[in-house]
Image (cartoon, rainbow, N blue to C red; front, side):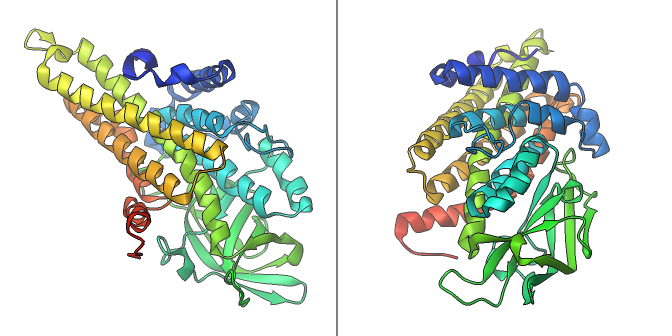
Length: 393
């Protein structure tokens, strides 16, 4: 077994957790150890997401756990972050599934939906009886979502939606898609609006993207909307302009700040454990100065990322978190986890490329995390603008 987290974290960050948060941490960690770790290598190799996990996750209370009412748990932001940290210690695909269900889709409905929409979808999604996906990214509109081509045109009391969305997590297993589309509206918030599209709607289709070397234990789809008709009551009434969609992304990015710490911990613990048991030149690998240098550098990156995540949670809970704060956390923590995964793989030597050990899997997954929810470069420009006042977009 890997060493205890307190032995890995040089700053003992979890000492600040409340008893309730410790119970949550241990419950989710136990679930990951019992249900995910024994199977994730084979799921990853097969490119499979195990749908039987949905009810287990719902029973843990993770779906919509920060929402007040509608089946949500009303939990603190830090508690949600801790849950995602433990999930991503298992696999980024597992955390991504929960992020899309909770931070993007449920939170989008909660923030911008009508009472009827909230009552219709949120309780079912909290219980795992309905799944959702978030349709924003397009083949030619990734970092610049304002350039989306998907459009929605009013036809009587309905909206006709046409377009293609890609790299959509949970796309083919969802019951509802929160789709963002250009409309002909011209106002101060722009013409982009959000729509709830049941995936059994005529003209809606989803095709899984299978040829991928990252996030293999996660479902990624391309969704097509060809003349999909939805009534006006399926439009999110408060979702006006691109800012609404981006606010959903901020919620998901906050979760990534914690999730990346979990992936980093898994890699660091594996490297420490392996270095203690692997002998080189008649001594443990851990006794070599070069190995200790690697482990200390990794542990420093890990502890620093953990501090950033906890501070962001405090800012969020006090209502002071800004998009720039979230960009800082996403940029810093994913880059740190990415470096830790690569270094951990090197500590394992040739065994580092084996799926019997988690670093190579985390390393590949983190390449996706480094890119989605705003690329590393986009968050650099956000922070550059914050520092200088000049937009480089």
